[in-house]
Image (tube, rainbow, N blue to C red; front, top):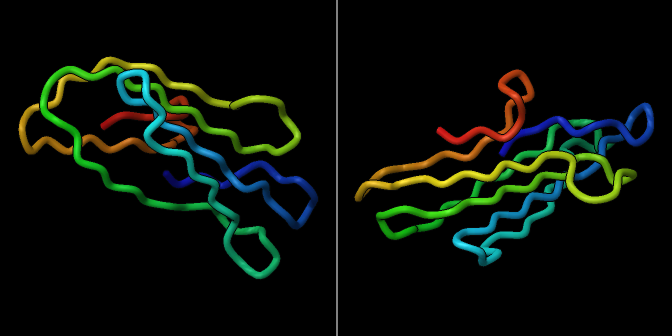
Length: 101
């Protein structure tokens, strides 16, 4: 997930918080701090997990502003994965937020 979070102050960005539920179980909770000495750079992280082939229910939640209650973006989807298939979950505001590729 790569995302330049909304500003808290003119020179500081909020950390981002991401949660992933797989088949009703929360399998990932991560907070990524903004980069840079002044905490004004983009927040980025990568996580890899193995998932069995088949149909799965995903819920991805992302929060990019510490002042807002709850999550700012939520994506729910049912995906069918083939053996050895790679599913990338990303954040692209130009494509509507959380994307599955």
